[in-house]
Length: 130
Image 1: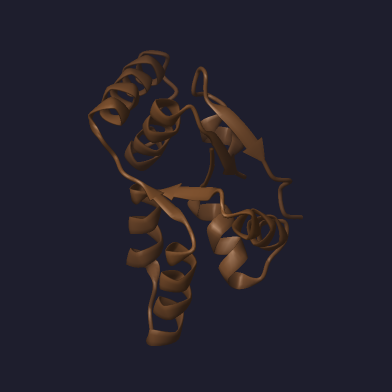
Image 2: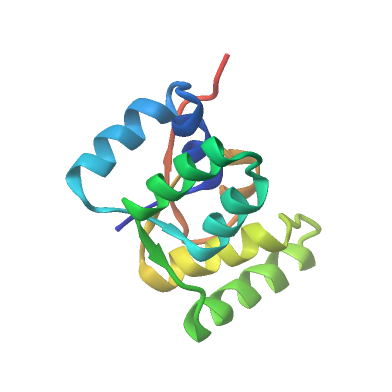
């Protein structure tokens, strides 16, 4: 399973590459997902009816993976480990990583600085925008 992070989904919504083309391709396959946490991030950031409709339309095309007990266990382990190493990544990113680990999913993201720290997390990393 491929799970899209908020940064890539925002690129898609704004028509920016590399996210726009990649998400368009992945949505066409019908196999792209995102997490309930990413859904929250997108929906809480919209202003205006036009933006809300674009976000809602995109989310309707994706499978939204919930944050469940198994994801919570993975997220907690990741948080304990990274904070013990002095390399925290933030609550939302722990939760997203937990969902991905619980689902054995690959996270499509540009946020290398956070998610590359997570042991066992597979990344489908897009190139950084110039």
